[in-house]
Picture (cartoon, rainbow, N blue to C red):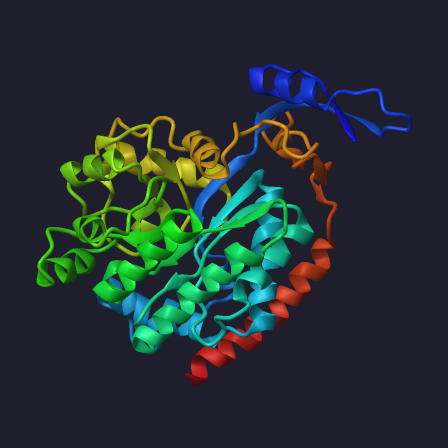
Length: 394
């Protein structure tokens, strides 16, 4: 397949076109009209929350703090998941991400009653629909102690070692330091080194995470990971709302990337991540379970940055591509295994017209090509009703 791009106004698009050109007999040539842009990267999300926009029930007792939000909403949802509801959630989320121009999803998963094989369910959804993805299981001890945590790490290891999907890769994950013992954190760091992959972990999203590390004798959750040798280069530290600027600089010097999730931070009332301004080129943008409509996330970032007088946020959307370059091991937008760059074509009004991922046209004329969107939505609505009932029964 060869794509002829009109209005090739950026260097990377011209390079992608050069790499894709050829004179193969019978080659399918398609002309994509509009303004070409690099595919957007959602640097952190939760595919398991994909059904939430379809009527996620409010908790019976309103939460008063962040930990109660987790306990009464999200930790109930993840315990209620089974294979069918997880599949529907992932498909609905990924399909809408592609339609909004997000070509890469970095996911952090948890389903305590469906650990083994859960990453394959997510990977199959991404692979079938045509999204590039980095997947991990967030190991935690909050339900079943160290054995639960080790089962999560085992799922990360299994997936990294067994996955053969060319556009999907695995990482090692922890939920957050405050739900893990020093033993589990050390084991996660050892597994990262054994597999040669970074760690993906929530970090100081709420003050409770910091208080927990201090009670254990560490200056911060970041200091705890460093002390336990669990922060390999290119690790993903998510949120960092309650890290100091000095701690953010320390993480950056250790080679970590930070991911800002402004809509989620606002919705969970945990504060604004002002300290991330201490390292401009190592902060990317995620959604933390909100839909991967990255321009909506960027608009929220701009609004909240203005409210907090933060002038350090330029480039966070684009930094997602730099992050993927580091994690994928090749220049983002370069040819890999004979497939051209990930890119999005938008019309003059900015609406997504076409999306190409790994040389595959997955959206054209604003329509998903890799599956029937009506069927995906119908499945999602059916599974959402079943999932809400399962949550209420817990």
